[in-house]
Image (cartoon, rainbow, N blue to C red; front, top):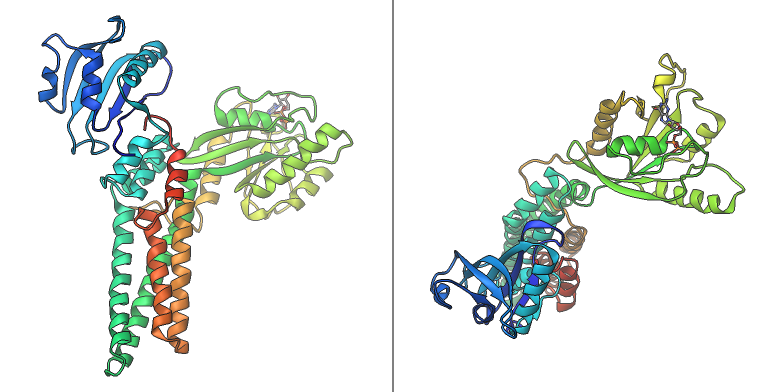
Length: 456
Ligand code: GDP
């Protein structure tokens, strides 16, 4: 498969100053040479790798000029894919890019699959799987913090940490095999002690990584947030206020916000995936019932709930009932429309953070952001310089590796034969190998790279 040359438009489609068509593979230069003409005579550029050249793209079949371009030809192995790569900088419009890609494909390239350039970088050994995944995480980063985690992963920080642990496991395996091979020797007891010690150390390392996964997930996937409350308290207005622009339909007719709207916003570096829902209240209207059921479901699934109440009509029976239904540990009470009731006071002691705001005037919005940050980051590892696990796939593999190590530990204390225990140890090693891709299946690879965009 790696024998053929692939091509795709690598920039996003839309109007822009420049757009790039990328070609990678054994025939990349030959293909580019067919469609590019340069003032200095054709093919001259082939001698100068990693330099920008000026030329024209023409359709070899008709001789018609398609675009005036700058292009770079990069000789393997110092390229993104470790293959020969040509990047053609066209004018950034849909038609010049599409036409350029068309003639490149006609000249012998195959249309690249999603993520195929990065997949080749992995298959050709330039980066490992965790680093390949970091590439897509960089592209999709919603906040600076998400970017920071992804860049450190691309840099190989996670891979290094895992390689270190895998290495320890290999040393243990070698130790175990020695004992298995020479059972008569008097090394059994001493070795058992050593193995138990190493197992404990590795469990400690894996658990530390798992703890960090909660932080990583927040920044990579975002915090699923639902704005809930009875109709007309200002949920849509709050959503709009958080979004900073009028996206949701704001209406004063009770129960009309039936459509579920989703947006990602950046609150102090934390990506909030906001969902606006219909009011959580009893109703006879069927269409609305569907909305309400959905609202309950969303409230259950959310990581953060903003329960909105109306300062003018505060803590009604309905408000009480809704509050009772919610998971307090993830809820903030937002008292809205404080501009209409500046002197609002209440006797209740709520078991959750309370913030007074006005979605209309913007009053209290900073306090709300502080409160959100506090609730989300409390009890979680800080975003420091340490390695952060951000993908569920990685977390799952580490979790399984840890389970095997725990079984190993239990096995040592109950005297399970070493040759049986070595199976657990090997499984732990393999589980960790799924993260950097050393023990990954073709199937999983396909699944991971199909999540990429075309051209990357
Ligand atoms: P929802 O049904 O909970 O989504 O409520 P909406 O966001 O549609 O708001 C209901 C009504 O309250 C609209 O007329 C809004 O303009 C008004 N409203 C929302 N927030 C505020 C606020 O902070 N102050 C004032 N004075 N009116 C608000």
